[in-house]
Image 1 (cartoon, helix red, strand yellow):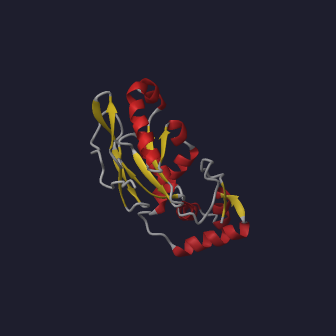
Image 2 (tube, helix red, strand yellow):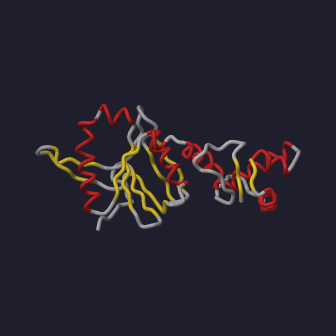
Image 3 (cartoon, helix red, strand yellow):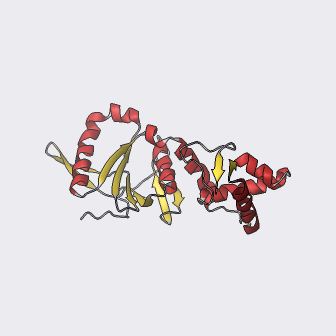
Amino acid sequence: MVIISFKKSRKIGKNSFSLTGQISSVKNNSIIEFESQLEMNLTYLLERRCDVSMYCEQPIEIEYFDGNTTRKYIPDFYVQYHNGEQEIIEVKYEKDLLEKKELLEPKFKAAREFCNSNNISFKILTESQINTPQMFNSKFLANYKTPRFKTNLGDIEYILDTLEKLEQTTITNLINECSSDDNRKAELLFHLWYLVSNYLINFNEEEKLSMNTLIWK
């Protein structure tokens, strides 16, 4: 049985050549650090996915031989799913995979061998799999999941009751149905995004959110 450490195996410091930082994870009730734009974007995706129970960054140190030299490889993320499956994820730009192939292959080979022997999946994700409409939605809705401003229960109930009558409609139509006053519409839209971010209003997660997105209760 492999033990994944929740203490980061590699310290993430400031980097003048790539984006580094941290986000507050509601799913993990902790701070998640990243050291590239892609890692940050994947974090938002993992936060949004309902099948992910938890995840952590820089989870484990894997030793491997490069000729006669012992080296260490630390993958980017560990993910645990509600069905019990586990996954190690490496995040790389497609350009880096091509330009650094000889350097990266021994690391990936070691990771695959480690994961195979511990019943864990190993996956390499690039910008093609990460920078998707789902990522845009996840990043946008993260601002509303735990809003800084207090929500109004009356507005929440009003929006849900109106949507139930309409059954399925666009965001624009729902807001227009709720009010004709522009200031009131802005207040209601804030609460609508809160409901969407918390899965109380549904939409096609594979399509990029807009005011013309179809929604239903």
